[in-house]
Amino acid sequence: MQLLDGKSCSEQIRQEIAQQVSKIIASGQRAPHLAAVLVGTDGASENYVAFKVKDCAEVGFKSTLIRMDETVTEAELLRKISELNADNDIDGFIVQLPLPAHIDTNKIILAIDPGKDVDGFCPANVGNLSLGLPTFISATPNGIMELFRRYNIETEGKNCVVLGRSNIVGTPMAILMSRNTNPGNATVTIAHSRTKNLVELCSKADILIVAIGKTEFVTADMVKEGAVVVDVGQTRVPDSSKKSGFRNVGDVDFENVKDKCSYITYVTGGVGPMTRASLLQNTLKAHQKR
Ligand code: NAP
Image (tube, rainbow, N blue to C red; front, side):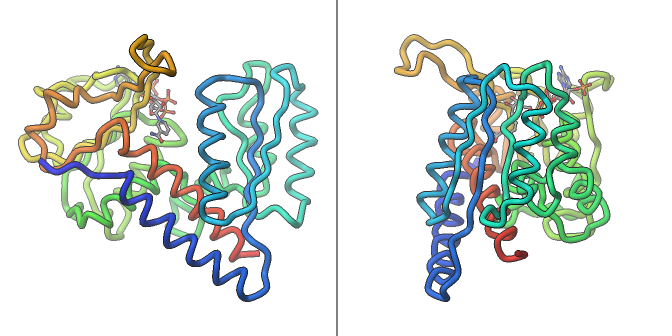
C-alpha cells in the first residue's frame, strides 16, 4: 500500500505557484488577488477560510476576507457579489458554503461572474467542464486529478466508482474521470443514497472515490484487492484529547481498508491540502486570464 500524500504534493504545487508569482511581480504586474466571503461563524467554515487566507500569503497572493453576519439578507449578499464582480483588483472570489438556510445558495452561485468563479461552481463553468472546454474546475475533484497525475495512477479503462453525487465533488469528479484525458478515460459509475447493492458495486471498483460525509462508511468488504481508494469525507467528531476538541474522520475505515489497497488517501494530509492547492491554481489562472 502506498499513501497518496496530498500534503507533500500540495507543497510542491504551492512552491510552483510561488515561483510564478515572483515572475509576475518581477514583470511589474500586481499579485493575484483572491477574496473570500464568510457568512456567520461556523467553526469548520472559519477554519477553511483561515487556511485559504494563509495559503494566499504563503504563495504571495493578496487576499481579502469579507465577513458578513449570520443574519445578512440574501439581497445584501447579492449586492456584495455584484461589488466583487465589478472590482478590477480582485481576480477571483469564493463564497464559503454552506450558507445560512434563509439564503438560496443557487441564487448566490448564479450571481458570481463565471470569470471570477474560482470555486468552479457556476453553471457556465460546470457546463464547460462537461464539454471539455477551458474552465475553472471545482477544487476538490481537480485536486484529486492532480494527485492521480503526480503519482502516475493509471486510470484508462479502469472501473471507477464515485460514491456521492454532490454538485461540488461527486458529479464533477465523475465527469473528469470519464473524459478522454489522462488521467481520465475510466468507466465511471456514480453511486448515491438510492443505489442498490453498494457493497457489490464498490467491491468491483479499481478506483473508488468516496464523498458522502458518513464516517468510516466504506469497510474492507467494499474494497477490491489492489484498488485505489480516495477518501474525500471529512466529518468533525468530538475528541477531548485534542486541543481543538474534535478530530476529522473520513468516509473510509482506513485502518481496515488500507492493506487491501495499492494506493489510498488518509483523511488528514490527503484530499484536503490538494483542494486548497487547487483553489490557488484557479486563482492564478483567473489572474492570467485577466
Ligand atoms: P453532500 O453534498 O452532502 O453529498 C453527499 C452525497 O453522498 C450525496 O450524493 C448523497 O446521496 C450521498 N450519500 C449520503 N449517504 C449515503 C449513503 N449512505 N450511501 C450512498 N451515498 C450516500 O456532500 P459533499 O459536499 O459532496 O461532501 C461529502 C464529504 O466530503 C463531506 O464529509 C465533506 O465534508 C467532505 N468534503 C471534503 C473536502 C476536502 O477538501 N477534503 C471538500 C469537499 C467536501 P443523495 O444525493 O442520494 O442524497
